Image (cartoon, rainbow, N blue to C red; front, side):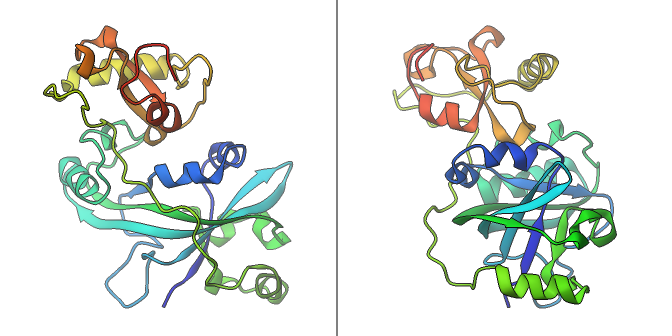
Length: 264
């Protein structure tokens, strides 16, 4: 049976999405890495963890007020116990099409533990101010997921019943397959970027404030919202040398595709 979760991330993450079209959420994977199994990681029982078809209600925090901004559906889930990051990365690659090496750049990657990752279908935008019970998220759940079924305050339960939309709304945007390397459209063989080169590109990007390197954008955010892009496309003779690589946000990279440098 599908469940409802209220969903929050580090300050600024969801607030940044609120400024953009919600369809951009379909090109992002969200994930947690834990040393121990935590809610809402599935434990094997029926309907006990985050699953495809569950609803997520992301909320922002502004001036102490918490507001639900959207109704989303979980499109794909990868939830596994792992013993090495390489093992976890393979599972993410098989499920979402992520480039190997992405977890290495997680702020605090556990060497072993549990990984929960998902991407989303978009249903609709919302504008619902949350009741006072959500003012102390840490009392509800420290990991950013709050099950609707775990709400205890009678007034909050009534608020949820009166304000959250009924299930069954039409999805207007399906989650995209995530790829950090677009296929080469020019027929030239694309070789993987060497790990040391990729790490140097990302180190420079982090040192410069994690900004999208499209001068018209300069979005900032976590690693999983950015792609490593070839400035001169491979199809037009571009190499994997560090001077031909840049870091773009998902939106800018997908809009650029195999275009020439400086065109977005």
